[in-house]
Image (cartoon, rainbow, N blue to C red; front, side, top):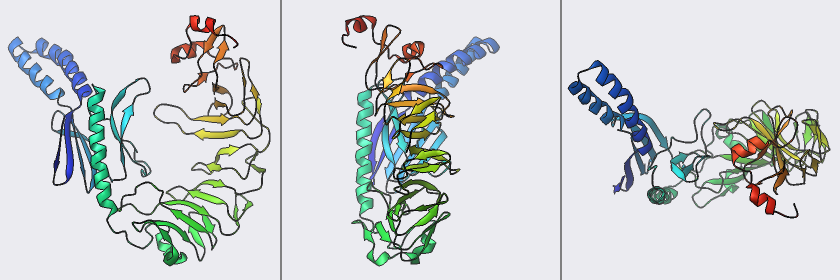
Length: 404
């Protein structure tokens, strides 16, 4: 691993130790077998040496300069297999595997990834020896902060730079707009109707742009929130003035807050119309708080319970989480207000619980914590699943526990 600075840009070159290790072992096993079987011994050893030399050539190169962060991963020493160019508002973070206690490398994470673009790079950096990884991370973060400080001094154009709202610039009072010290828009009032996606926003509404975090000067203005200056019609209902609307980068309505009265029926569910309501790309309700007691997974959930759907990712399937607004009785435990459960994607059954205290099941004690406690189809705690997840407390410790 080598780190140096040239003309203000910081560069780092190093080996992907895990890739080199597995590549070398695979080359020895496969290349050795093929070379020694189909070639004379002398030629076989030569071929094996060449194959191993090529396969251990896994390396990474990262450059941090005024143009952003450029990451390239190589195989066979010179063949690029992964290229990534990120602007200066991307973050360089330490990567942890779910099944590993220590850090496993570095990743570049994008705060504003375009649709279809992965917001996280491949893992790079030293894989063995956490101190080396932490030193490299600190060095790269320092270099990134230096570039951000230099970029923050770059003047920002006064006009509104936004794909959806830029053509409607005349509908905003940009003269009285509130900006940050760099000139970036923060808040601006509309003076005529503005169209965001399929929503017509009335005059007098306040548009909030650009969050507090650093934003690359080349990035367009990001619409964060709209506070209505007058009533509008949404979902077949009247939305109150002062309601907050959040839109996705595509212009799709993402969530509402303070839109309706205390109780309103949406898609057959009575929800709290003053709390946050979130929607997916198809306009389906994906996040809400019960305005009345409701049923799911064959059980009655108390009023005030918060339901949220999480889409599937590389690790977990689509699932619902529920933060309870009251008590919910299950075969092995009665959950209290503020504790959480997980539901299947079709909300037909409870798959796991997240209590704030240890649970006793089948004479054993299940440790409460970050890892959800899995349930069987009948609603009882899945002891085998708990054992697999490593959340069963030792029998001796359980026997010594009192007042459970």
